[in-house]
Length: 249
Figure (cartoon, rainbow, N blue to C red):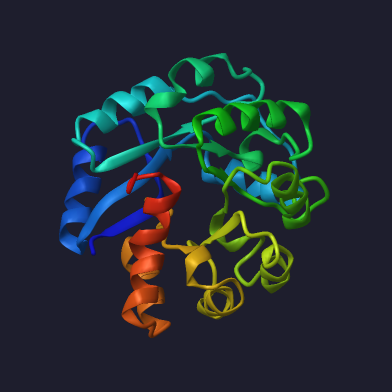
C-alpha cells in the first residue's frame, strides 16, 4: 500500500510544490497532508516554545487550496486556523479541505479558549480531524489536549510531533485511554514511537515528516527501525490516515 505523509508544510513560493512532489515520487510517498508553511520564522517558533507568546499571523488558505489542486490529489490540504480571525472563512470553504490545523505555538491561544472551541464546532460539522501542537506549560499541554478531546469526543485529534519534546512518555500515558487522540511521529525519538505503538496500538500512530524542517528519510528510517510487521507498518504509513480523512468512504 502506498505511503501517505500525515503532516508536512507547503510554502507558497515558486518551485516548492514541484520539488515536494518529486521527493514524494523518489521515496514512494503517494500523498501528503499539507498546511501552509512559513507562518513565522523558526527563531520565533523556538522562542514561543521556550518562553511563551504568540502572534496574530494569517495564512492564505485559499492559495494553499489552489496550489494543492494543481497536484491532482497528491497534496491534501488542512485548513490552518487563526483564532484571532474567527471561523467565517473556515465555514465558507472548509468542505474543500481534509482537516483542521491549530497551532498554539504560533498564535499563543490556549486549548481551553472559546475561540478554539468555535473552530472545533465547525470541524465537527465537516467531520474533520484536528491537528494540534502541544507545549510544555499550563493551557497548552497534553493534559489540556486530553480535556479537549474528552469534551469533543466525536472529533479525532492528532497530537503532532509526539506531544511535548522528543521523548514524551508522559504524554503517551496521558492519551492512552483517550481513543480519539492519535500520535503523529515526526520529531519523536524512536524509543517514544516504539512505546506509542505498544501502548496505543499501531491503529493510533501516524507517519508524518514535518517537511521541510525534517527530511522524509529520517522519519521513514525511524519506522524501519521499529521492525514492525507488515500490517502495522501499513496502518502507520497509510491506513490510519486514510480512515481519518474518510478516504475509504
